[in-house]
Image 1 (cartoon, rainbow, N blue to C red):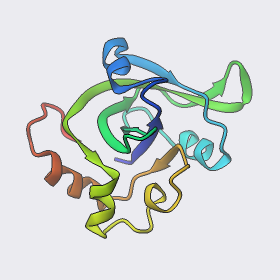
Image 2 (spheres, one colour):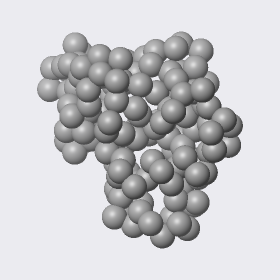
Image 3 (cartoon, rainbow, N blue to C red):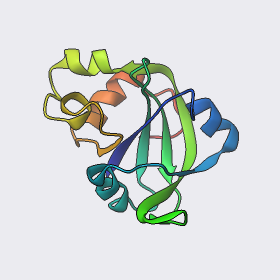
Length: 139
């Protein structure tokens, strides 16, 4: 299963908002590379929710609820539905990811301004070791 990462400013839309709302339309992405990533998502894929804006940490997991579609406000853009799965009890920080030395080529480390990206296959097993098996949902 492919995994993705989507960044959000917690002051704009936080993991707490997604948990409360249970689902959201992930919109507002304009970067061509990030839009290409959104277009590659499929129903059921997992998305790591990342708080930017000074926090710089993975805070939860969502699931793609439907295939991506054109943004009704601007058909040149693409949106996708995300459904809340769970919050991480202990967020995983960008600093921890960088300190591991394992993900130097990942855009999260290389292109910190990119808002949506694929997650390297090797990251998920590493992440599982960080968060443990305390979640009812596997990632």
